[in-house]
Image (cartoon, rainbow, N blue to C red):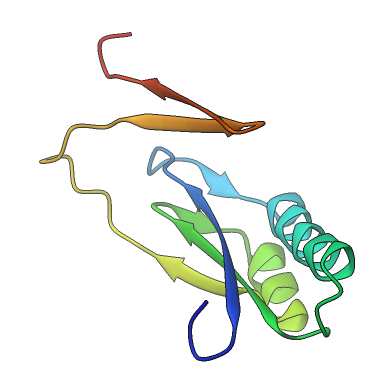
Length: 99
């Protein structure tokens, strides 16, 4: 929680030649609404943030703007080891680059 707001962040670390389409924005927005409903949180308290290493399609950009999804485009820096973490039902599974 930051400044009385909750942030839900979806991060996509994709290849530079991939494009994020609107279905990913809709999924994050839906997750945000479900979180607010399930936790009896007033609408607008949860801020959806979509962070990506690649570009969004024009439609995805328009959808994000209309739905109030913040977009953070972060350049991929390969100087750090890439580790993927899947969180599922309280379990954390880490995938190392040599898996």
